[in-house]
Length: 579
Image (cartoon, rainbow, N blue to C red; front, side):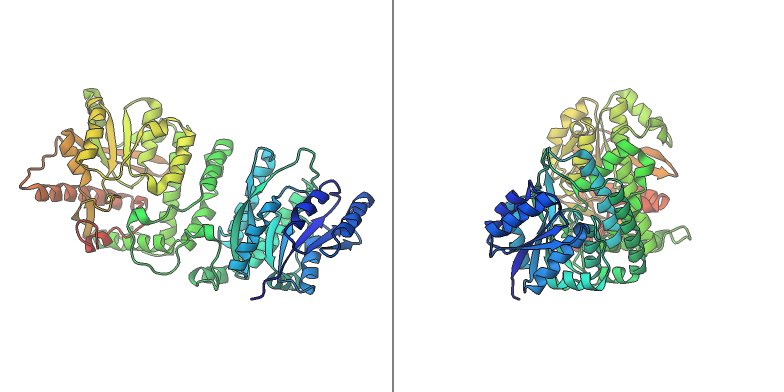
């Protein structure tokens, strides 16, 4: 495919900035189309001088009256297309964008000629906070309108269009002509199955910069555009859902590689990438602080809907879990595998994470959590002894740890493999400085780990680990137990660790029941012994006992077990987790 790029610069009354903008762009030796959107006389004089200075490289187009940024961009794209160019790099005239990034946009377009190349702003301290946070409301609406996160920033004025695709859309649909143009053209190109790629690029706001964004009327126009696009999305919903099941003709944006398409062999849980951006999680945290839990929780529904549509591996794992659950709990209350149960399953997971965040930021009170029977826990705390507490990815262990730390009721430390959820853990750590102080990251649970734990047990701490995931270390040992009607691999580490520590062992589950959490704390073993000759049999016995209790609580709260991978697949690969 022939690649003939040019640059399109819409301008309206930026006489002081346009000279430097053109000078920085001219060094790339690309044809420049400057579209004057009805500027005043001083700006026209500056543009005329630039056209003379860069004769042969700069083409000056002038609209008779101010029609808006969208009108200027469309005029520039049509002119570039008519002149025989295949791609147009649009950049604003105000000098906010880094012209040194032009080669990066061009390289991305050469590698993928059919893709729209979008700038993803990297702001410095000059960005107004109202602009920084306000634009993310638009981004969320765009993600809803496209049922996708591929358009990472829909308002950046630094982007590269394939002209054939862009002009075909411009000529077939009436697009807005003001500031809402940048948003709507991207959504409609996405509906046409265009591919997108994002390029991080520095954005600087000049102290004396001129902005033509009308806070009232441009926000009204953008809101009107989003309303139109949401209805357009609903009208196209069957088609958009079908697109989720079909591969694109071309690869889409690189930084959305977390979307899993097509059937794949089951992967170990630690190999499955954490989905969701650190920025998105941080914005939820900020919203929780500013607007409270109830308002912020509303955003979970569109977010979960997106991950439901794009997370085929998680959907399949959820359905597999409910099929297994149905074999041991065939009553009418058992969820049936399908889209509805997968949505409720993922929503419960999102709400659990949201509650963890709310707990660490002080938005959850101790009155929101109660013990089913506090006697075992109270007796342990009164004894002053340390203990090993085995939980699961069921309900919300983290929220209870936050409350314990905040209330200073007990010394609680989580022993976890955190690599899989590092972004979310960073958000929690930023919300409360005590988070990291009560967290120990390990790669495997075994005798070497026990040495690190012994001092904490001796100091009367409660070490909390989970027993329903195999070790992240590929050499980690597992042992099979019957769970939900089939053989599944369980980690040996918790029982090896308990044996090495020689401390009491308890089971702990925290389930959400209506709008409150209920804690279940029960004795598991006063001490776990693993005789050398009968080690395997004893490990199997403890693992099976744990699996039965986990099964009991899964039946009690079927939507609250959050292992979104094929939990049973490991038993088919052998006891050590290897194929």
